[in-house]
Length: 100
Image 1 (tube, rainbow, N blue to C red):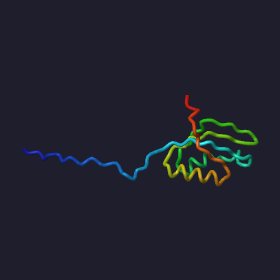
Image 2: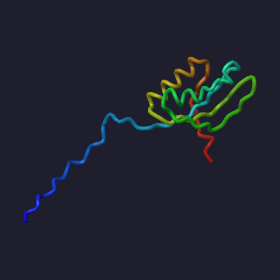
Image 3: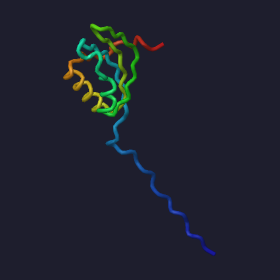
Image 4: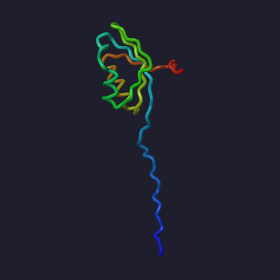
């Protein structure tokens, strides 16, 4: 009895268009009028990003947050633009002072 030889399928190539997940650390400074707004939650849900608060100091006068965002670069850029439009000051974290 002859058996049919199994044909090997060629390995699928990774899509060149598939974008890599990136991480970006940012300093956010909230004015008093935005302190109670759920900006970080909105960024995560609106732009399909994973937010991670690395450090925060919030008072009635100002909110300062070190935020790490994970996701596609285009989504991170869009989220930064949106936060700035809302009135949040956004600056990149230059030096990695949080890692232990």
